[in-house]
Structures are given as structure tokens and as C-alpha cells.
Image (cartoon, rainbow, N blue to C red; front, side):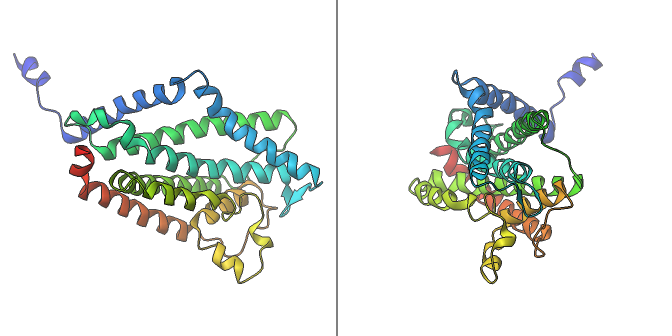
Length: 267
């Protein structure tokens, strides 16, 4: 009799939340990888083709080193770390619209779908980055981390920026769909102004100061600086600034999710 009572004890809010996140993660993972015949293949091909194009372009101009390190290693650090932000922000921003039917269940809130998608993208990017780096090592690239904590700090900061952006943008585009086009235009040049395909150290002052207002640039510089101690990182590199921007975005995104929760469910 006692065991029967214990088995029917109400679950705590954290137990319910964890169960929701676990179920959503499995659902999102299956949809992300198997929604079409090419989903799984394209998930790996996108960064590989982008890297291949950039390596080819730099090879044509016979540029063997950038800012003190091998060009391929420089591109690997910059593009893979940027993909952490871009995929997290893009997939998370579309989570609410893609999972609207699930809001019929009281346990599932719009913010859950965004957070779970962002977590899934981090897991997938870790797998993709591991395979890409392993492939580069097999091709003779000296892959290694001189300062793993610096690399981890840069990657986590970029992911948190992506989560904050996804939380805020997912609400904004659901309430005002036209904002999606404007925000898309803002994201388009982000790769160029984040130092992904050119060294920020080559930009003269005061223009470099303006570029470094972009927190993504600090995260990408940190990843490259942690990859090799030979890398000439900009002296203005500041991970604290990047994390401060990430916390502001997260606070704003969670606030919007809380204030407009009823409108998002009713849409």
C-alpha cells in the first residue's frame, strides 16, 4: 500500500521540466537528422564545404599563415566557432513556430522548445567539429589546443550569445513576422564583421575598435588564441565583455518569453 502511494506522488516542477526537455530533445534530434533524406548529410556538409571553399580561396592567393598560425588552422578555429553561434541562433529562433502544436500540453512552454533546440545544436556542433578536426588531422594539419580553457570559454560564450539571440528573436518574429526580414539582413554580414575570414589585428585603429563592439569577434579571437600560442590575438580581446553581452541577451530573451508567453501560445 505504501509503495502504491509513493508511486503516485506528484512530480516536482523540476521533474516535469526535465521530462519535457528530454522528450523534446529526442523529438528535435529525430526531426533535425531525419526530416529529409539529406538532413543528416547536409548537417555535416555545410561546414565542410564552407571550410573547403575558404581553404581553396586562401590557397589560390598562396597565403600559408594568418596572424602567426597555419591558414587552415586559422580557418578551422574561426569558422567552426562561428557556426556554433549561427546554427544555435538560427535553429532556436524557429523553434516556436515549428512546435506550435505541442503547446496544447500545459507542461510545454514556448521557452522550452527554444532552449532544447539550442542545446541540441551545441551537441550536434560538437560532433561535427570533432569529425572535421579529425579529418583535418588525418590530412596532416597540426590540430591541437595550447589553451583548452580559452577555447572552451570562447565556444561557450558564443553558444550563450546564440541562445540569447534565439530567445529574443523567436518572440519578436512570432509577434511581428516582418521583423524576420530585417533581422535576417542584420545577420547576413555577421561573418565579415566578426573576423571569421580576415584577421581583426590587420584592421587599423579606430576601425578595429568599432569592430570589437561585436561580441562574436571576442569569442572567435579567444578560440584562435587558445588554439595556438603563436596566434597574434588583438590586445583588446575581452571575454568578460562577450559574457556580459550574452547575459544581457539571455535576460532580455527570457523576459520577452515570460511577458509574451500567453500571446505565443495563442498565436
